[in-house]
Image 1 (cartoon, helix red, strand yellow):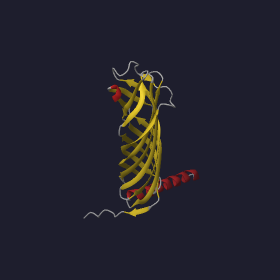
Image 2 (image 1 turned 90 degrees about the vertical axis):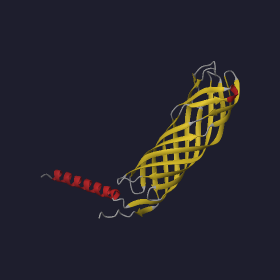
Image 3 (image 1 turned 180 degrees about the horizontal axis):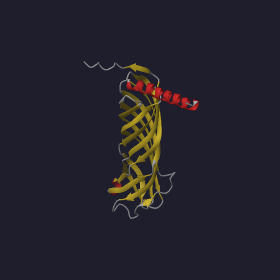
Image 4 (image 1 turned 120 degrees about the horizontal axis):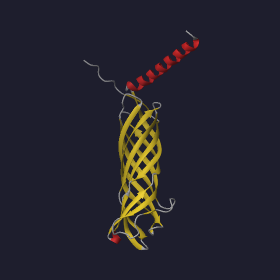
Length: 251
């Protein structure tokens, strides 16, 4: 047997052995991290096409479309070491406006593309209190679900040259709720990498002012944004492993 072949066999044996030890560490369910942690994330955000109602005109003005945008988030929290954890999260989202589609009778201008990506946008800064639950699977993969409630400061600015629509930049704080779920991978006992999906609903933005159709002014515009985000996440737990009692032996 050649020395190269022996070396290859030895390397394969070491790899299998190392993998088995790592797998046994998580399969045993003997240790789960308990303590404070921090997390960061970033990815893509989509805003559902939103109804744009204007009371001053007496009807539903139309639908406001948005391009895919970006989002970032950061959180500090505490894991109890057996599934549940709580955290305070700050997040930011930004999406440029894509188009306005007017309802029948709302405008003689018709649907038209928004002009100026840097002008027409919706940005949202949120502060959320979340609760989550980790499902330990006996492997390095940990799926989880969670929900949160908090406040979001939304800033909207719409400028459409084609239909003479103008909503000057204005900001409002509103109550928001979110639900999320994802899967993390334990790089080490404390370090986790993963992917998360988040749905966030913000209470209607109302009292929006602006003008439409050369020009008809309005002062009671209302927008109802919903967000969908997919983000890559990284977190690190600064606590210590929590011993979990093994299941009772079968009788």
